[in-house]
Length: 264
Image 1 (cartoon, rainbow, N blue to C red):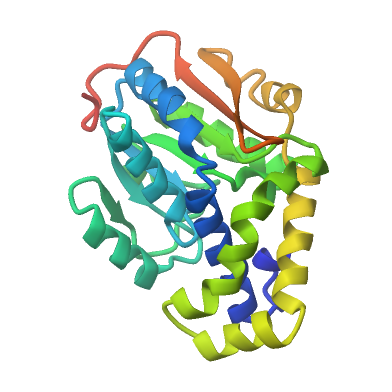
Image 2: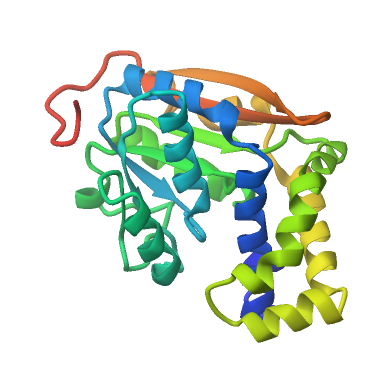
Protein backbone atom coordinates (compact mmCIF):
# COMPACT_ATOMS: atom_id res chain seq x y z
CA UNK A 1 0.00 0.00 0.00
CA UNK A 2 1.12 3.52 -0.83
CA UNK A 3 -0.64 6.53 0.61
CA UNK A 4 -0.60 8.52 -2.61
CA UNK A 5 -2.82 6.03 -4.47
CA UNK A 6 -5.19 5.08 -1.65
CA UNK A 7 -8.65 6.66 -1.86
CA UNK A 8 -9.30 6.91 1.90
CA UNK A 9 -6.21 9.10 2.46
CA UNK A 10 -7.06 12.86 2.54
CA UNK A 11 -6.50 14.49 -0.82
CA UNK A 12 -4.18 17.12 0.67
CA UNK A 13 -1.83 14.40 1.88
CA UNK A 14 -1.89 12.54 -1.42
CA UNK A 15 -1.17 15.74 -3.31
CA UNK A 16 1.68 16.58 -0.92
CA UNK A 17 3.44 13.30 -1.66
CA UNK A 18 3.01 13.67 -5.43
CA UNK A 19 3.96 17.35 -5.58
CA UNK A 20 7.04 16.88 -3.41
CA UNK A 21 8.14 13.94 -5.55
CA UNK A 22 7.79 16.00 -8.73
CA UNK A 23 10.04 18.72 -7.34
CA UNK A 24 12.48 16.12 -6.06
CA UNK A 25 12.85 14.68 -9.56
CA UNK A 26 13.55 18.19 -10.83
CA UNK A 27 15.76 19.62 -8.07
CA UNK A 28 17.72 16.39 -7.66
CA UNK A 29 18.37 16.12 -11.42
CA UNK A 30 17.16 12.55 -11.11
CA UNK A 31 15.66 12.52 -14.61
CA UNK A 32 18.70 13.95 -16.42
CA UNK A 33 19.92 10.50 -17.46
CA UNK A 34 16.66 9.69 -19.23
CA UNK A 35 17.12 12.23 -22.01
CA UNK A 36 19.57 10.28 -24.19
CA UNK A 37 17.82 6.87 -24.03
CA UNK A 38 14.47 8.58 -24.61
CA UNK A 39 15.92 10.27 -27.70
CA UNK A 40 17.22 6.88 -28.88
CA UNK A 41 13.75 5.45 -28.33
CA UNK A 42 12.12 8.24 -30.38
CA UNK A 43 14.59 7.75 -33.22
CA UNK A 44 14.06 3.98 -33.24
CA UNK A 45 10.27 4.19 -33.06
CA UNK A 46 9.87 7.14 -35.42
CA UNK A 47 7.24 8.60 -33.10
CA UNK A 48 6.59 12.33 -33.11
CA UNK A 49 3.83 12.16 -30.50
CA UNK A 50 3.84 10.41 -27.15
CA UNK A 51 1.03 9.40 -24.82
CA UNK A 52 2.18 9.89 -21.23
CA UNK A 53 0.35 7.44 -18.96
CA UNK A 54 -0.33 8.02 -15.24
CA UNK A 55 0.94 11.60 -15.52
CA UNK A 56 0.09 12.57 -11.94
CA UNK A 57 0.88 16.27 -11.44
CA UNK A 58 2.64 16.32 -14.83
CA UNK A 59 6.12 17.10 -13.52
CA UNK A 60 7.87 14.00 -14.94
CA UNK A 61 6.74 14.76 -18.50
CA UNK A 62 7.70 18.44 -18.20
CA UNK A 63 11.09 17.57 -16.71
CA UNK A 64 11.80 15.13 -19.54
CA UNK A 65 11.04 17.85 -22.10
CA UNK A 66 13.35 20.30 -20.32
CA UNK A 67 16.14 17.71 -20.17
CA UNK A 68 15.84 17.07 -23.90
CA UNK A 69 16.07 20.80 -24.56
CA UNK A 70 19.03 21.19 -22.20
CA UNK A 71 21.14 18.75 -24.21
CA UNK A 72 19.85 19.92 -27.58
CA UNK A 73 17.81 16.85 -28.51
CA UNK A 74 14.54 16.70 -30.41
CA UNK A 75 11.44 16.91 -28.23
CA UNK A 76 8.22 15.12 -29.19
CA UNK A 77 4.73 16.38 -28.47
CA UNK A 78 3.64 14.75 -25.20
CA UNK A 79 -0.01 14.23 -24.33
CA UNK A 80 -0.55 13.79 -20.58
CA UNK A 81 -3.24 11.39 -19.32
CA UNK A 82 -4.35 9.92 -16.02
CA UNK A 83 -7.26 8.02 -14.49
CA UNK A 84 -7.72 11.09 -12.25
CA UNK A 85 -6.69 14.04 -14.43
CA UNK A 86 -4.99 16.95 -12.66
CA UNK A 87 -6.25 19.58 -15.08
CA UNK A 88 -5.25 22.54 -12.90
CA UNK A 89 -1.60 21.49 -12.67
CA UNK A 90 -1.44 20.37 -16.29
CA UNK A 91 -2.82 23.69 -17.54
CA UNK A 92 0.04 25.56 -15.86
CA UNK A 93 2.61 23.21 -17.42
CA UNK A 94 1.09 23.58 -20.89
CA UNK A 95 1.54 27.36 -20.59
CA UNK A 96 5.27 26.72 -20.06
CA UNK A 97 5.52 24.22 -22.95
CA UNK A 98 2.75 25.21 -25.40
CA UNK A 99 4.41 23.59 -28.43
CA UNK A 100 5.31 20.24 -26.89
CA UNK A 101 2.87 19.54 -24.06
CA UNK A 102 -0.88 18.97 -23.95
CA UNK A 103 -3.33 16.83 -21.98
CA UNK A 104 -6.56 14.86 -22.09
CA UNK A 105 -8.98 16.28 -19.53
CA UNK A 106 -11.14 13.14 -19.26
CA UNK A 107 -10.06 10.01 -17.32
CA UNK A 108 -7.82 7.61 -19.26
CA UNK A 109 -7.23 4.04 -18.08
CA UNK A 110 -3.66 3.00 -18.91
CA UNK A 111 -4.78 -0.59 -19.37
CA UNK A 112 -7.51 0.29 -21.89
CA UNK A 113 -6.44 3.19 -24.09
CA UNK A 114 -9.17 4.28 -26.57
CA UNK A 115 -8.12 3.33 -30.08
CA UNK A 116 -8.44 6.85 -31.47
CA UNK A 117 -6.31 8.27 -28.67
CA UNK A 118 -3.57 5.66 -28.76
CA UNK A 119 -3.20 5.07 -32.51
CA UNK A 120 0.25 6.00 -33.72
CA UNK A 121 1.38 7.50 -30.42
CA UNK A 122 4.24 5.92 -28.49
CA UNK A 123 3.56 5.23 -24.80
CA UNK A 124 5.58 6.56 -21.88
CA UNK A 125 5.17 5.81 -18.19
CA UNK A 126 7.46 7.51 -15.67
CA UNK A 127 7.80 6.34 -12.06
CA UNK A 128 4.36 4.76 -12.13
CA UNK A 129 4.37 1.18 -13.44
CA UNK A 130 5.18 -0.15 -9.95
CA UNK A 131 1.75 1.11 -8.81
CA UNK A 132 0.19 -1.65 -10.95
CA UNK A 133 0.01 -5.23 -9.81
CA UNK A 134 1.68 -7.65 -12.23
CA UNK A 135 -1.48 -8.56 -14.15
CA UNK A 136 -2.38 -4.91 -14.71
CA UNK A 137 1.21 -3.95 -15.53
CA UNK A 138 1.20 -6.69 -18.16
CA UNK A 139 -2.04 -5.23 -19.56
CA UNK A 140 -0.39 -1.82 -19.92
CA UNK A 141 2.52 -3.36 -21.80
CA UNK A 142 0.26 -5.52 -23.97
CA UNK A 143 -1.78 -2.47 -24.97
CA UNK A 144 1.38 -0.59 -25.93
CA UNK A 145 2.60 -3.45 -28.09
CA UNK A 146 -0.76 -3.90 -29.80
CA UNK A 147 -1.34 -0.46 -31.27
CA UNK A 148 1.59 1.89 -30.80
CA UNK A 149 5.08 2.40 -32.25
CA UNK A 150 6.73 1.68 -28.92
CA UNK A 151 6.79 1.83 -25.14
CA UNK A 152 9.23 3.69 -22.88
CA UNK A 153 9.42 3.13 -19.12
CA UNK A 154 11.40 5.02 -16.47
CA UNK A 155 11.75 4.22 -12.77
CA UNK A 156 13.82 6.33 -10.39
CA UNK A 157 15.37 3.33 -8.65
CA UNK A 158 15.86 -0.39 -8.93
CA UNK A 159 14.57 -2.79 -6.28
CA UNK A 160 16.86 -1.75 -3.46
CA UNK A 161 15.55 0.33 -0.50
CA UNK A 162 19.01 1.84 -0.01
CA UNK A 163 18.62 3.63 -3.34
CA UNK A 164 15.83 5.74 -1.86
CA UNK A 165 18.46 7.57 0.21
CA UNK A 166 19.53 9.33 -2.98
CA UNK A 167 16.22 11.20 -2.98
CA UNK A 168 16.83 12.79 0.45
CA UNK A 169 19.07 15.78 -0.49
CA UNK A 170 16.40 17.19 -2.82
CA UNK A 171 13.39 15.42 -1.33
CA UNK A 172 13.48 16.88 2.18
CA UNK A 173 13.67 20.52 1.00
CA UNK A 174 11.00 19.81 -1.64
CA UNK A 175 8.67 18.49 1.03
CA UNK A 176 9.33 21.34 3.48
CA UNK A 177 8.60 24.11 0.98
CA UNK A 178 5.67 22.37 -0.68
CA UNK A 179 2.97 24.17 1.37
CA UNK A 180 4.29 27.47 0.01
CA UNK A 181 4.63 26.35 -3.61
CA UNK A 182 1.53 24.14 -3.79
CA UNK A 183 -1.19 25.54 -6.08
CA UNK A 184 -4.05 24.66 -3.71
CA UNK A 185 -4.90 23.44 -0.19
CA UNK A 186 -1.89 25.27 1.23
CA UNK A 187 -3.28 25.56 4.75
CA UNK A 188 -4.03 21.83 4.98
CA UNK A 189 -0.62 20.98 3.51
CA UNK A 190 1.13 23.33 5.93
CA UNK A 191 -0.61 21.61 8.83
CA UNK A 192 0.32 18.14 7.56
CA UNK A 193 3.94 19.12 6.80
CA UNK A 194 4.93 21.59 9.50
CA UNK A 195 2.72 20.76 12.48
CA UNK A 196 2.47 16.98 12.22
CA UNK A 197 4.79 14.17 11.06
CA UNK A 198 2.16 12.87 8.62
CA UNK A 199 3.54 14.29 5.36
CA UNK A 200 7.09 13.19 6.15
CA UNK A 201 5.97 9.74 7.30
CA UNK A 202 3.75 9.20 4.25
CA UNK A 203 6.50 10.32 1.87
CA UNK A 204 9.07 8.06 3.52
CA UNK A 205 6.70 5.10 3.53
CA UNK A 206 5.66 5.54 -0.09
CA UNK A 207 9.26 5.91 -1.23
CA UNK A 208 10.47 2.82 0.58
CA UNK A 209 7.48 0.75 -0.54
CA UNK A 210 8.06 1.88 -4.13
CA UNK A 211 11.58 0.49 -4.02
CA UNK A 212 10.13 -2.87 -3.02
CA UNK A 213 7.37 -2.83 -5.65
CA UNK A 214 9.41 -1.70 -8.62
CA UNK A 215 9.83 -4.36 -11.30
CA UNK A 216 13.21 -5.87 -12.13
CA UNK A 217 14.61 -6.31 -15.62
CA UNK A 218 13.88 -10.04 -15.55
CA UNK A 219 10.28 -9.45 -14.47
CA UNK A 220 9.72 -6.86 -17.20
CA UNK A 221 11.13 -9.13 -19.88
CA UNK A 222 8.94 -11.96 -18.63
CA UNK A 223 5.88 -9.69 -18.77
CA UNK A 224 6.36 -8.95 -22.47
CA UNK A 225 7.11 -12.54 -23.38
CA UNK A 226 4.73 -13.70 -26.09
CA UNK A 227 2.92 -10.52 -27.15
CA UNK A 228 6.17 -8.50 -27.16
CA UNK A 229 8.21 -10.94 -29.22
CA UNK A 230 7.92 -8.70 -32.28
CA UNK A 231 9.66 -5.89 -30.41
CA UNK A 232 13.29 -5.18 -29.60
CA UNK A 233 13.58 -4.49 -25.87
CA UNK A 234 16.36 -2.44 -24.28
CA UNK A 235 17.20 -2.05 -20.60
CA UNK A 236 19.71 0.33 -19.06
CA UNK A 237 20.53 2.38 -15.99
CA UNK A 238 22.07 5.72 -15.06
CA UNK A 239 23.53 7.03 -11.82
CA UNK A 240 22.64 10.22 -9.96
CA UNK A 241 23.91 11.59 -6.69
CA UNK A 242 26.10 9.33 -4.58
CA UNK A 243 24.01 6.15 -4.42
CA UNK A 244 21.15 6.81 -6.82
CA UNK A 245 20.51 4.54 -9.80
CA UNK A 246 17.50 4.81 -12.09
CA UNK A 247 16.56 2.58 -15.01
CA UNK A 248 14.81 2.69 -18.36
CA UNK A 249 13.19 -0.09 -20.37
CA UNK A 250 11.85 0.42 -23.86
CA UNK A 251 10.60 -1.59 -26.79
CA UNK A 252 10.16 -0.77 -30.47
CA UNK A 253 8.89 -3.00 -33.30
CA UNK A 254 11.55 -4.95 -35.13
CA UNK A 255 10.09 -3.49 -38.33
CA UNK A 256 9.03 0.13 -37.92
CA UNK A 257 5.37 0.60 -38.71
CA UNK A 258 4.67 3.03 -41.50
CA UNK A 259 1.60 5.12 -42.33
CA UNK A 260 0.96 6.24 -38.74
CA UNK A 261 -0.93 9.56 -38.58
CA UNK A 262 1.47 10.73 -35.86
CA UNK A 263 4.74 9.20 -37.08
CA UNK A 264 7.60 11.38 -38.29
